[in-house]
Amino acid sequence: MFCMFSMNSNSITSIVSRQVGTARPISISSVLAASTLLFTITGCNNLLTDRYEATATVTYTWQVNYSTNSRDSEFPRRETFASTSLVNRNGQKPEGAVTGPDDRGLWWPALPPRPTVDDIEQRQEYDEDPSSPELLKDVKYHLSYQIGEQTRNLPTNYQVYREVAKAYPDRMPLKFTLGPGDRTVTKASRE
Image (cartoon, rainbow, N blue to C red):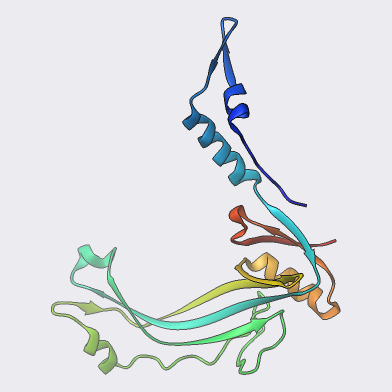
């Protein structure tokens, strides 16, 4: 099913406001703003396929915040150091996984080496105080699917990744809902 929105010049001129029994056209900018909002809310494509793969790229990164005084503590300069990543596919344990699955079903790589005091001081600028190194965790979700000969790879979310992880072992067909402009996958469900 495809959600479509179209508007032509006849429909623009037929949109009118009524005032004391007379009709007057609404400005085109008002119509375009309303149609953009309507498209944003309802614009979507749904597709059904059994040829898909969901990935969750997990990353550990060490970060140190550098601030010059208490005023800068809200907006410190940030420096990132070593990081490690691992790609999870369809909920299966990936090669190189060291820990997991976590409470979201994700496997994680080995921790990157913690920055040494020498590493931290090397990036320190005049009159700055470094924070203790902080280990950041990040996850980016993507879905690849194939319809006919066309393969697409789009960003997605945790819900879609988990639905694929549950359906993938049996290669069950899934219905995917694409976001505005078909640039993301917003939902997955079993048909």
